Length: 196
Ligand SMILES: Cc1cc2nc3c(=O)[nH]c(=O)nc-3n(C[C@H](O)[C@H](O)[C@H](O)COP(=O)(O)O)c2cc1C
Image 1 (spheres, rainbow, N blue to C red):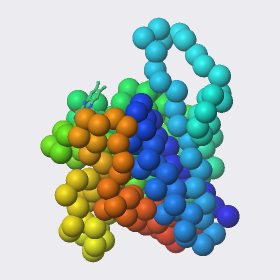
Image 2: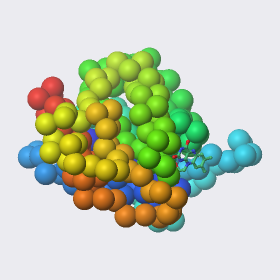
Image 3: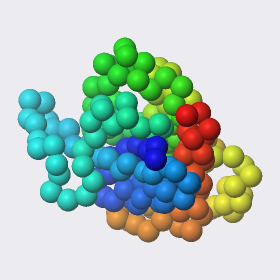
């Protein structure tokens, strides 16, 4: 069994809902399983640290997860058109994995949540791709042939899965957003399997 790391940060739960749909997509692929991980919130006091295991929800990610998994699907709420600092803090801790080429050739997908329709989903997704391309990973998007890409009136982009919360935090994913998140998880898992 090979695993896909589904790594996210979420403050109000919307990005976490996308992560759980992505896991369903990954887990539907034979011989592939999702590994759900989150990151702790960054603190204004940068020396502050936290236990490795949060009080609830999935465990915090370690750089080892990146080494052990065959692919990655990474998600963050949009913060002024970019990823949240908590996730960026984790990504910036993976210098050792970058230098050891731990992720070279592995596929990755992306997801995000915004409060407004034109609140910067694409810019967030594309900026999240940058460090992973530096890692030598392969960007997997969502193809237009997914039926929900043509029917969605909220989230779901060629650059990754997404959700629009309309400022209602926490908020339910639409059926199209769920379908596209699952499709992305499935696609990353299928491609990772082919590349093993
Ligand atoms: C500091 C900050 C910046 C934000 N920037 C944006 C933004 O640029 N565009 C947008 O649509 N929403 C923005 N939001 C709203 C969140 O992206 C949105 O509520 C998201 O759905 C939250 O995801 P979560 O439930 O996973 O925490 C911002 C929120 C915060 C706290």
